[in-house]
Length: 124
Image (tube, rainbow, N blue to C red; front, side, top):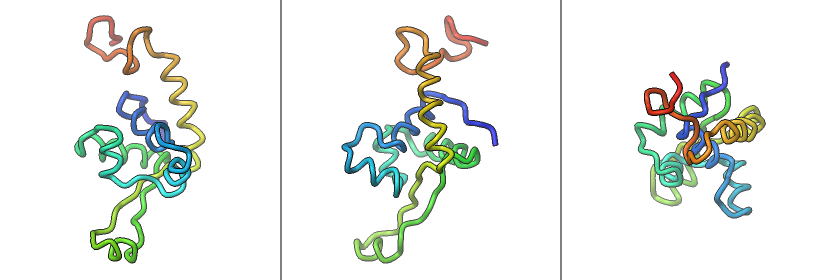
């Protein structure tokens, strides 16, 4: 399994799955239970057409796992079940290092990460 490319979107999703930007009590829940798709989309600002293929790539790399919530909880709340995504032990181990490496490689003054190919100053 190859490690995923650290695109700006990948970095955003990994930070969300690591519970960055949420209070400490919520962070524990994010790390143990994960985030469901709509919640993850709202946190990251990514549309479904970007988010779900990215989550699938992270899953294939062994960094993310998905699971359905219990039927009872969804039924008690009168809604369909949610599919949750959380970091695997491998993802939890590698994601912080990958994010740090991406930040270190980021050109000065670039808020989003490595320069994109084809843009002025970007690599080929």
